Length: 433
Image 1 (cartoon, helix red, strand yellow):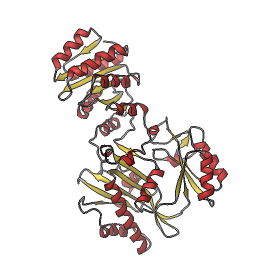
Image 2 (cartoon, helix red, strand yellow; image 1 turned 180 degrees about the vertical axis):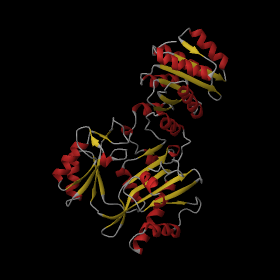
Image 3 (cartoon, one colour; image 1 turned 45 degrees about the vertical axis):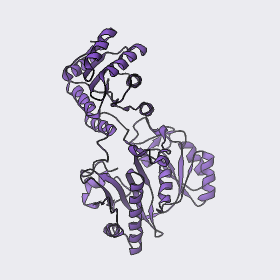
Image 4 (tube, helix red, strand yellow; image 1 turned 45 degrees about the horizontal axis):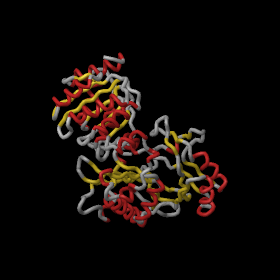
C-alpha cells in the first residue's frame, strides 16, 4: 500500500470511515475497515485478464479436492498455492491450525490437497489482520513463472494534484513503504491528465526509466500501464496495485500479484464488481451497520459514541481523549437516520461492552427529536444498564430535551460539549453518574 508516501494520502481520505481510521492511528485505536471495496486476488486476476493484461495462469479452488483437481488439470509441473484472504503479508502470516505462511509452492496434486486442507476453513493471521485473523474460504493455484526482476506499479488518486497518478518503482516485491522510507528516489510518480488519459508515449517513458532489459519488454510494460489505467478509470477504482510486476526469465512482463479497490459510491454503476464482495472478510458488526445506513468502526476504548457527521465524530472523540477517556468506536448515523436506526446503533454500541455511552448530535438535517425518540426506545427495549450521556443541539432541540425529561429514564443531558465529554469519562470510570 502507499499510505507511507507523504505526497500520496490514501484516495478518499475525506470519507467518513477513513476519518475514523485517521483518528485510530493517532489515538492508538484499532480499526480495519476502509471506504473502498476490495476483491480477492483470484478475482483481480480474472479482471486483469478481461483487460488483456498478462498474468500467470491462475485458477481458484474452494475445497481441498478441487485444489488437487485444478493442479492435475492445469499445473502438472508445479504451482504456487495462495490463501485468498483480504489482507497483506499473507506469505509471512500463519494459520490458526499451525500452517506457516499463506503462500506455498506445491509439486504434486497430493501436496496441493494437503496444503489447501490446512488453509481452507482456517483463519490466517498476518500483520494486517490483527490477532483475530481472517477466514480463508478459497485458494488460488498459479503457474510457476520465475521473475528475472520485480517492479512495483500502482494507479491511485492523488489529492494534492486532484489527478490520478501512476506510481512506479524498480524495487518491487517488497513493502513500498520501506522503499519510500529507505530510497525515495526509487519511486517515480507521474500525474495522469484525466481527459487525455495515460498515453502510450508517456507510459513508454516510464518503462524506460524502470530499466527493463530489452526494448520489446519496455513496450510490453508500457502497454500494461495503459491497460491498468483504463481499468482504473472504467471500473471506478480507488487503487490498482501490482506488486510485483515481473520481467520473467522466459521474457514476458507479467502482473504476478494484484490488489484492487473500488469506490463504494460507484456501486450503482459497477454492479458486476460489487457482486464480488466477500463479507466474510469484514467485521460482522460493520456489515450489519451498513444495512441500516450507519458508518461504524470499532476502536479499543470503553466509551461508545453516537454522533451525526464525520467532523463531529472526530471532534467528539478528540474531546473524550482530552478529558482522559477513550472512544470504543466511530459511529455516524448520518443526516437521515430514523428512530429504528438509532436503536440499531445502540445495539452495535453495546456489542463492544462499553462502560458508558455518549450521544452527541448537532441537529441540522438530522432532527434532535428523532434521535431522542430512538434513544428512549433503545433505553427501554435494550434494558440499558450502562450510563448514558447525551448532548443534543440544533433542530427540534427543545422538543428532544422535553421528550427525554418526560421519559424519566436515566439519561444524563448536557449542553456544553466539554462538560458532556467529561461526564461521559467520569461515568465510564465509576460505572454511574
